[in-house]
Image 1 (cartoon, rainbow, N blue to C red):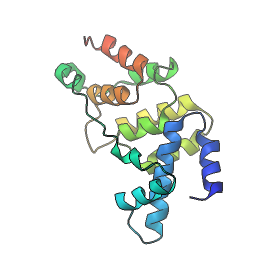
Image 2: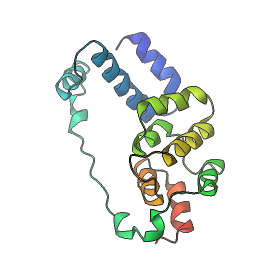
Image 3: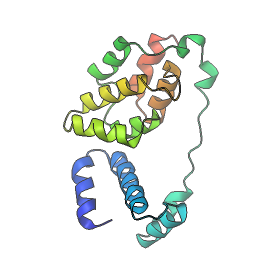
Image 4: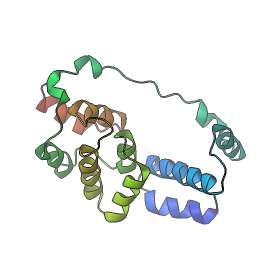
Length: 169
């Protein structure tokens, strides 16, 4: 990545380092693959060694199954407009638009379109991502999966709101 590319990422995502790292990874993958070369973990490891950060690949994400134990049938419904509106209007999610989009299973194209459509409107970004997710056909967009995504992005207030709304201990 050139310094200009890095500076552009830093300018766009300076308020959330996780978004900057994720978008940097997507930019690296897209550039690598546009050069007719597959983006592999080996190539990523080489790049990370060049900046003396190869141990980033050693960090393992362990799945938390505590919500699965509480996955009542009422958590298998699709979130209503009211739930989505409350999450965004009351700022219950935070500033994790890119991370949330990824956790919800949206494509990077959908996430980028949202970022372009709402460049300086975080609430608009979150709301748009939630609306797009609710229309996905890859898997049923349920309250349970929304809770899992909010837990992964550490949106404690949003998760607490859903637990209270759906009576989950």
